[in-house]
Length: 214
Length: 416
Figure 1 (spheres, one colour):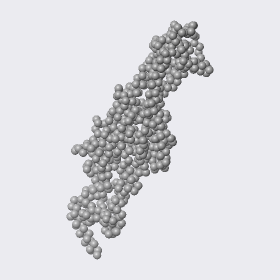
Figure 2 (cartoon, rainbow over the protein chains, first blue to last red; figure 1 turned 180 degrees about the vertical axis):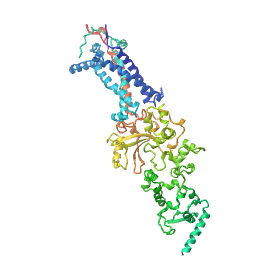
Figure 3 (cartoon, helix red, strand yellow; figure 1 turned 90 degrees about the horizontal axis):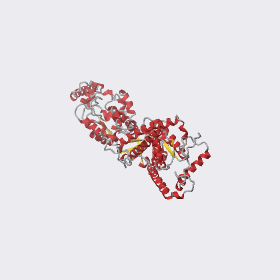
Figure 4 (cartoon, each protein chain N blue to C red; figure 1 turned 60 degrees about the horizontal axis):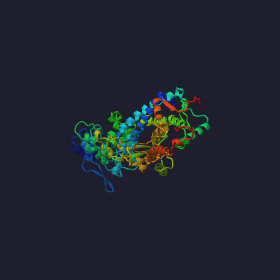
C-alpha cells in the first residue's frame, strides 16, 4: 500500500463543512416546505436557520473555488479533451459499478494526485460544483429577499420558477446525500475513502504513476 | 296690484322673523325665502306619487357653514320674479339632488374634481342615481364644518354600507372611536378618503393608510417576519389583523408592458373569449396567458376586512398560511378592473395554485409550503426512495454475487 496526498486541507475543510451544511439545509428545507407534516422546529426558526446556513455555505464555497482557481490542483477537474478516451473510460467505469464490481473485478480507475476522479466523477462533480451548487445558492439568495431581488427574479421567470428550480435541486441533493456516502464506501475497505477525506491521504495498492497534465 | 305685492312681502318678512328667531345672520332676502320654505311639510308634487320636500330648517341653515352664503348661493337658478309658480319640471327628487352637485362644484372645484374620479361618481355615471352625491354626506342645508367631529351614529357611509359599518363599529378602531375623549381612531374617510373614494381592493391606498398611522409597522414586522416587504405587498393587512376573517387569493391581471392592472376601460382588455382562454390556460395546460397574474392574499368580504382586532390577537403563526391545504388557498379568484373601476372577479379552481402549469401562469405568486406543486412532492419521494433503495440493492447484489477469494483467477487484481 502506498499513500497519496489527494485531498489538500482546504478541500477537506470545505468538504466537511459543506457536507454538514447540506444535511442541515435539507432538513431545515424539509421543515420549511412540509410544516403541515413535520413540526420539529417552528417555521420561523427553520427559515432563519436555513438562511444562516445558506450564507455560511456560500462563503464556504469560495474556499473550494479560490483553492482550485489559484493552485494547480484544478487539473483534477480538467475535462478529458480526448472524447473517445473519455467515453471509453466512462463506459468502463459504469460497467464496473453496474457489473464488474459484482464479479470482483478491479476498479478501472487508478487514483493519482492530479487524477483523483474517475471519468464519471469528473463530469458529475464539474456539473455539480460549477452549475448546480451555484444555482442552488443563487436561487436561495433570490428567495431570501424576494423584494430586493425583484428584477433578478423577473429575469429568472418569476418567483415560482425560482422556487421550482430551488426545489428540484433540493430533490437532487436529497438523493445525492444518500448515494454519495454509499459510493464513498466502495474503496478497498468501506471506510478507506472516508478516512482519506479526513487525513488527506488515499491508500493505493499500485505504485503511484507519474501524473501527466491533460 | 304693486301695493298688494309689497304688502305680501312685508307680511312674509314678519312671518319669517317670527318663524326663525335664531336666524339673525340671514339676510332679508333669505328671510323672505324662509317665510315660505320654513313651513313644515312644504313640498312639490312631481307626479306619479313622488314629492320633493321644499322645507328648510331655517335655524339650522343659519348656523351652517353655508348660512352666510344665503339661499341664492346655491339656488341662483331661481327667478324670484317667477317664483313660486315657475312650473319648473323636476323628474324626480333624486335627479334634483344629483343635478345640484353642479352648484357645489362652483365653489368646491377641487373637491368636485376629486369626487369625479371616485368610485361613487363612476357609479353615478353608469346610471345608478343612488350613488352618493355631496348632499348625501354633507346634508343640503345643515352643512357642518369639515373639521367637526362626526358622531358614530351620524356617519353617512352607513346609509349604504351598513354591514361594513357594523363590522367596523365592533373593531378595535370602532370601539376606540366610540369612547369618550379626544378622537384619534380612524373612521371611514380616514382610510377611504372623503371625495376620491376608490374601490377598496385596488391600488395601495388602504395599505398606505394603515402605514400612515402605524408608522412603525414596517420596522416592527421586520423584527420577526422574513421577506417583510413582500409580505406587506402581497398580504392585505386585515388578512392577519382580522384573524376571524375568511381569506382568498385574488390573482390580478397585470399588463406586463405597462405594469398596470388590466382594465376594461383601457381598450386592451380581455373579452369573454380571451378571458376564457386565459382561464383555460390557468386551469389546465393550454393557451399561453397574455397577461401576468399577480396574486394577493386578501379578506373575502369588505365587512370582514373591517373586523380588525388588537395587535396581540393578529395572526403571527406562519404555518397558518405556510402549509398545504391552508384556509387561505381554498378560494381563488381572477380579477380585472371593470368599467366602474371596481374589480370584476371570476372564480377559479384552487388547483390553479399548485398545478405544474402554475410555474408559468401564476409565476409571481408562491407561498412556501402553502401552494407547493404536488408533482414535486412525488419527485422528492421518488428521489428519496432511489437514494435509499439503490445503495441497498447494490449492496445486496455485491454480497450475493461476490466471488469467494478461492475462485479468483491467478494473478488477478484484488477487488476494490
